[in-house]
Amino acid sequence: MEPSTIMAILGAVGVMIVGYLILDSGGNSPKRRVEKMSIPQNEARKSVFSFMKVDDSSNRRKIIESSLADLEKDQKTKSKKRKGLKAKLIQADSKMDPRTFTIMSIIIGVVSAGTPIFFGLSPLTSVGIGFVCGFGLPRFVLNFLVTKRQKQFTAHFSDAMDIIVRGVRTGLPLGDCLRMIAHESPEPVRGEFTRLVEGESVGVPLEICIERMYDRMPLSEVNFFGTVLSIQKSTGGNLGESLDNLSKVLRGRKLLREKIKALAAEAKVSAMIIGVLPPGVMAMVTAVNPEYMADLYFTETGQKNLMISVVMMAFGIFVMRKMINFKF
Image (cartoon, rainbow, N blue to C red; front, side, top):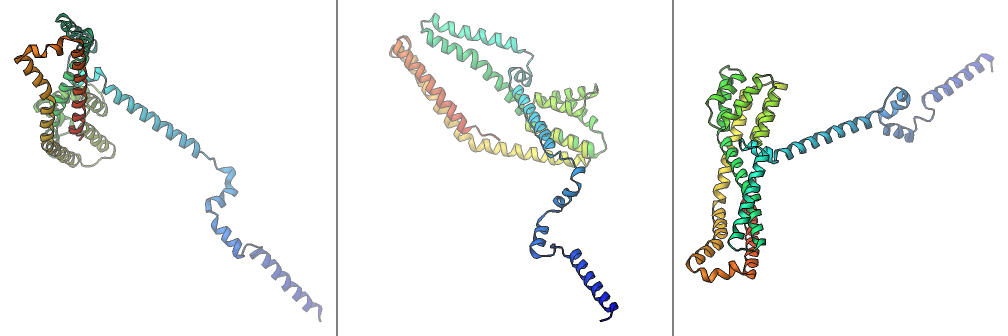
């Protein structure tokens, strides 16, 4: 064989070996290809560029969790403040401060406890009456005033939204619409929007003014209103359409509330009759035949039974109220 032929064969064999090593090198086997396909692309690149990448996912997660925890804690603190005595007095639109309210409650409690002792009742019964009248009665009246004011606000708040919708659609700015509500709406809507307009006129941002309104009137309707204005201010959009939808939602909630009250009216009347019947019968029997009820009022056994009956009646009224008081 000629030397040139031998050289050509050796060159061809060398090229085939080099090509096999380059193209395959154990990487084209089925097992190897499956292993390569199972490795994500970011993991494959990580081995090459790992020295250029900073892993901050854990730090970012910690920062987000910390901010969410602080936000939740802040919300719980604000919710707790809205349920305090000072906040309740503000929500009732009362000029009385918490110190004066506490002093008046103590005076009512002392007078309510001293009067039964003067008429011969036992000290234990007198202390119970004084506690109920001094601690429970003033707070019951305060909660009643707060609930009454919130109902009046809810009844006219949807009309205020309609005023803003009509004003915005005719080209009026939002500030003029708020001033219109502050002048023409009935109380307590007028007073709340007057405070909002006054705060905005001295430079307080609208979001903070609405947040203060929510502190004075902690209703979901006010929260919806603030959310709509905040979203519209940050993202833009049709404010008239947004507030029109809000007004429809508020009217639908009001209609549903009235429907629930109508359906629960029979249960409430039954609960009132059941709650009033025992003390009413006792009062009528005492008026007709006082000597028959004297042992209940002026003996130690009768007073203990009377206190037990009062506690049982209070517990029964509390249970009935929870059964018929729907949250909506």
